[in-house]
Length: 389
Image (cartoon, rainbow, N blue to C red):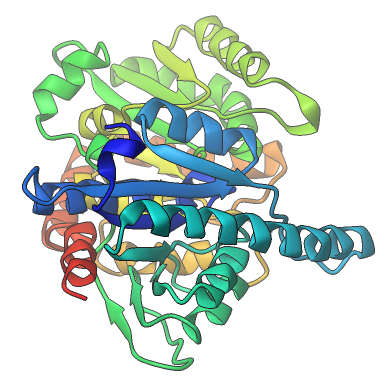
């Protein structure tokens, strides 16, 4: 629907970007809002993201309205801090102009802001406050980041998809994981057929999230000489989402390196920089290796896929390790420290993976533990709540 044909509709503005983890939950909540309102009471969805290329690559195929800000993350280094300060004012001014335009086009219908965290959300929330708009915070990580701690004192309501000890200004309502439809594998056999898995084959999925994980890519290439025989013996097919490369390497270059490594060791594999229909991969997989961003943790839960989580190693608060905690405590997942250096990771992870690949009963037990956690329907719960206010 063209924006001009939405005049008079309620408008929901999802603010967050910089990684897929700050965008995908907004897409999931937007899907549920549209499902709840139907054609009789249509809504308008607008996403405000960063000017990073990953945001464009995530949002453009979705066919949703979006606007990019040149917001920058806060850091303590002088140049990073200066860039943050300069971009803060510019982003607020641009967000205010956008909100004013949306309010004019809404013709008296509500314009509501849903903040998803990260460095884009901060200036957008400040702009929304100045414009007098309703603000909802959706926290995704077990340890809220700086932006969410700041937003929580300014939002009308706060939801969190993971238990948190944060008690900043008001109660944070706990909801189940927030997972978009494209990340749900609804029919296991159909998913397996779609990824090329034949009868009797097992599927191992490896993902570093929307940006990829150079250390995971490197660990897999280092472990392949030892893992290859086990992967061949157990008839494993690999699905590897590799993202881009460190040090300026292109995503296509990283993918080709991995493709060559799998071919050299005669392991059937699909390698791509970014997966559009993640649900097919999760639904087809017997086991996964993943970062522990809130989105990935929620997708493992929603698809009941046993997973080895390797949390992002550079976060001081180790919030990704906390993100995985509930699944680990229930026996549905494992968590190991990413030691960054490929050989160190291979020494730790290689024997663990060999054991998992051989042990069908253990994987089945982990899957049952994830089923017992219940549905990952946090997006629907939040959609109902924001429609009611």
